Length: 150
Image (cartoon, rainbow, N blue to C red):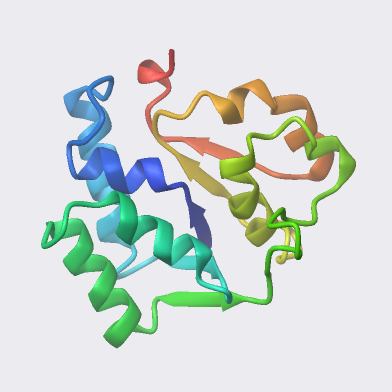
């Protein structure tokens, strides 16, 4: 199954989010581990998401190594035809206008599937704040750590 994973899931797995509890870290680590077996990571073919992952993760962390292995050897990444416009923004339905600019790329990639691929989130409250627009667009956000959303 193809999924879109918000950068915060990788960051929580790397223990970089103080609001994440132990269960949250475990859920994120398990999700990333599933990319080796049952999940396929959906990203944009312009590699904006991949670059963001690497910018946010500690160099030589287990998460960086996992991501590198996924990119170079596993066939567990699916590059979707999705690029930002010249303005740097991503083309999305109007109902997603309230979505945080930093999250728009994830929604754009999810919408390249029919039905849209699920988006996995750990601790970013922006997804919850745009729930109505997400529902209207047919997007589902899987909250890995609802107990940690503030």
